[in-house]
Every structure is written in C-alpha cells, then in structure tokens.
Length: 403
Image 1 (cartoon, rainbow, N blue to C red):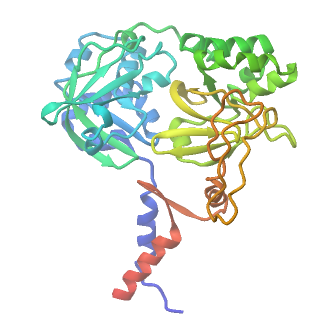
Image 2 (cartoon, rainbow, N blue to C red):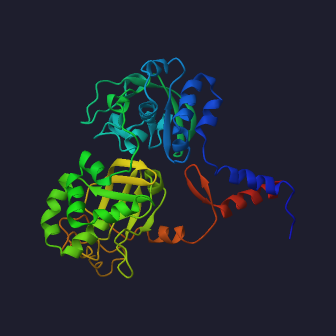
Image 3 (cartoon, rainbow, N blue to C red):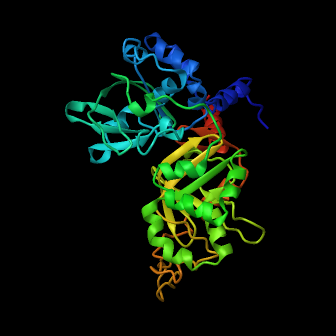
C-alpha cells in the first residue's frame, strides 16, 4: 500500500471545512460600508436565525441607506421585523434575479416566518425591469404593493443555492413590520391559521378535539401543513362521510412531530411520519422536491406547499393546495397495467375511487432516492447538493497520480 503524503489530512480537513455554516456577520465584517446594518443584525439577534438556515438571501443596505430606518426610532422587535423583510427564505443570486420567469415573482421573508405578518405582509415582490435593473417592493396584507422602492446594486457574497448576500439601494419599509408588537407568548397555531386563510382547518381542529394533540407538540417541535379555506370547502362532503376516528386521523395526518423549516424540506426526499402514525398504521407521506416546489405525496394525492404562515423554530405552518389524503382512509390511485409487449413504465389511472378529485402523481419516483438517503454513506455538503466523499477522494487520488 502506497503511503499518502503528509498533506493528506490537512487537505481532507479543508474539504470538510467547506460544510461549515455560513456566518453573516463575518461576511459583512469584510465590508465596512455595511457596518450599521451588520450591527443591528447582532443587536436584534437576527444573525443567529440567518446563520442556522440554508437556501437564503440577505439584502443589505449601506450605512447611508440605514438612516431612513434609524430615523423612525423603532423599538427592538419592530426593528427586527423590518430587517427580517430583508432576508428571503430562498436563494436569489445576481444571475437568478435577472432571469426571473414571467418578469416578476414574490418570495417569503423571515418576517413572514415570525407569524406576526398578517396575510401577505411578509412577502416581497421582485421584478426584473427594463435596462437590466431589478426592483423590490413589500406587499401589504391583501397582496398589494405601491411601487418598487428599492433596486439591486451588486452581489456581495454568492454560494449558489445556499446563501446570497446582495446590496439593495434602499431599506424595504412596511407599516405591518413597523407596528408595535405585544410581548412574547406561546404560539397559538389555530389563531395563526384563522388570520391567514386557513380558518376552516382551524375550526375542524377545534371541533374534532385534534387541536390538543397539536398543542402538546408545539414545545418539542411541530410542522403543520394547512389546506386553505377554498381547498377545504370542496373537500367537506367527503370529510363528513368519515367516522369520528377517521376525521381525527385525517387532521392529525397534516401534522409532523418535528420542526422542519422550508429549507430543510427542500433538502430532503423520502417518507415522513405524522401525528397520526401509530404501530402498523403508517399514516406517512413522501416529501418530493421539484425545482423550487416542495410536494407531499400520499400515494392518493400530491399536494404542493404554496405559502408560509410561520417558520420559526420550534413551529412551522405551511399552506398547501390540496387536502392530504392518507391511504389508510382513501384508496390509492390505481395503476393500469402496461400494454402487452410494452417495455415502458405502467400508465397511471386518473381516478381514485374514494378520493375527492385528487391528483394521481406517480408516488414511486423517489424509491431509489429514499434508499440513498438511508444508506448511511458519509457525504460532504456542497453548494448544490450532497457529494459522496468517495468521489472527493477519487479526485484527490487522481491528483496524486499526476504528482
């Protein structure tokens, strides 16, 4: 066996160090023109929330640009809420900003994740404008915005699909973010739902008695997937046909007994247990990532996350576009046999007997990925995904051959 050179260990340590979390205050420390913005990230403790997340964009303004915000003399919590509007729960590097499909998009911010933002007040509209400019504007609770109040200046730090730090021209202001906030208290999940378009689901939790199970899991961590009022309205005839126990199980199926940020959900594929899981009754579904979309596949229906009510450890509540139908209560979408002589995959049937109009997305496409997630292989986290360490070592040994 050929002994490896003395620099092998330092080389591997250097590779492993690439997996370290980003540090926003350290990044901005190299740019004194943003020292005021950096100072208030620390003062409000927002930097810790930024550093623990993956797939994030931080919009900073220079010291002169901070004067408009500081002139308002906001209390600490409203100040944090305004700064939270400048942190997007998604990656927007300079290239992506100039290639926004259909010219504009809206993105959720950390202010939306606090649960304090009513309606869409925690969202920012991004528009790719003429002349190569990109504009930003905050939305109000009803989804309206007055004008593009800030524009993209330049990129400060860019690790694709992990973190982007960009300079914008002006502070993003919002009356909702600046409003006085009551003292901290326990998160009330059903109250959040009622305020942000999921009142019907909140009422079902209360009336069925399932609410208590959700409340008991808040302290230890919980993630809830909430069908919006319009979605649930069309499902109610089927809901009323369920037994009392079936209704409770269906509602518990929309909760996961661990905290999962949107970034965490985007980074994984595979099965996930729910509050309804017990013994042989799996009551699980699969998380599937399709580009920027996060989908939940129950084998009866596939739902997509469409919005965030709150995403603040230990609680996350997301809006979804379909009611999650567990296969323990509803028949799986049948798969038609392939025609004789055909080597193609089996065609999907478009109807599920007991499912009220569910989609019939293929639920098996993640089988190999699920196995890979559970094979225990040591991996290194790169900017664009997970790289097996075997590949890294192969590249390294290839360099040795050249040497």
